[in-house]
Length: 428
Image (cartoon, rainbow, N blue to C red; front, side, top):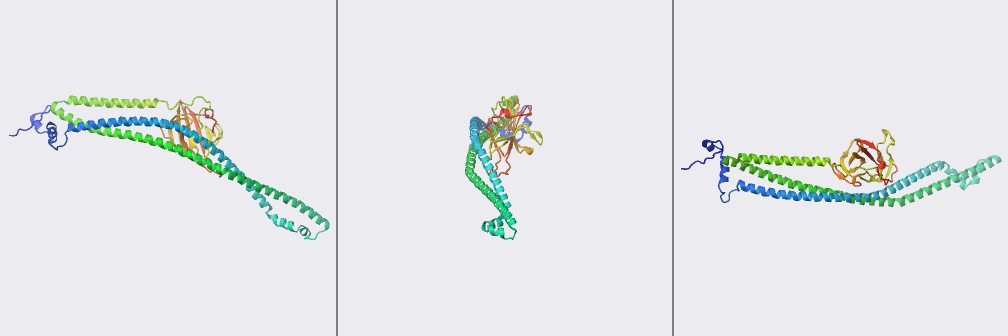
């Protein structure tokens, strides 16, 4: 006669043990009996496999973290190279600014000379028939109308004076025409220099953009690898924890080991709490670290943000009152650099300022830059002094009426605007 299998748990009678669900009985039989040929692996085997997979994932995660650290060091190295590249680009932009200003001035002078020439031609237009007749038939023109001798003589004198005046006007027109031709030649000679400066700037800007894109790709690849390894480790850890919990419940029913299971869970909770506290401490330490070295004493040691010239200084009169910052008139598509080393705390469109960036330099100092066409730094990113952070809009120097974009720079200390000029070098 077949005897029933009794499953006794803590505080349970034999009858209650016989009435346990079939699922628990099947799981207990799978743990107690060796698997038959071709049977599915047991829970212990699955747990061991999960533990091995988790160990492998943890190793991969550590390797990914090491690669991320290497990527961070490479990013710092590239940041230094970007400062050098931005300095080379500034030289090209200075040449472009000079060529743009020369072309714009020559174009303005040429148009002014053409306008003066057109005005003289308009003034002499009604007199052209008389000039032609006098040049062909001077005597006949004077004697065409019968006049007394004294009036004829007076007419000859008037015509002589008019002829002299007409000769002066003709000479002035020839001078204006010669000036227009000379200015056009100078403009034609200056345009290749402008084109060469624009091409040099474009090459330098493309090289700098390639370095920026490479740094972003390197950072993204390192972060993706670390994230993938962490997700895989978490998935295998969750699987192992689930199998361990199932075995712990079965062992508690078979061997009354609930105390040990509670201790294990308490230890896991303590580890999680310790990890959370460590993460919180790391976050606090990161927030406590200074954003940058500050700006130091006002001795002109900081890099000007863009090539070009200052068109509005700190304190100049504006419609809203004295200016709180400095406005630069930059060459077309000029590169904008950070005046100080620090952390980007804002980088987005802002009201009527357009694209606006704020760099925390440390020590209560912040630089505000607005009027950019493109931003090349993100919030939270550390930037070096002289490192590229954006690009100005382009404009056509051959069009005197074109609107030149302005870069607005403001320096704030403890939230109050101060004059940035003493801190900046006079290279721009």
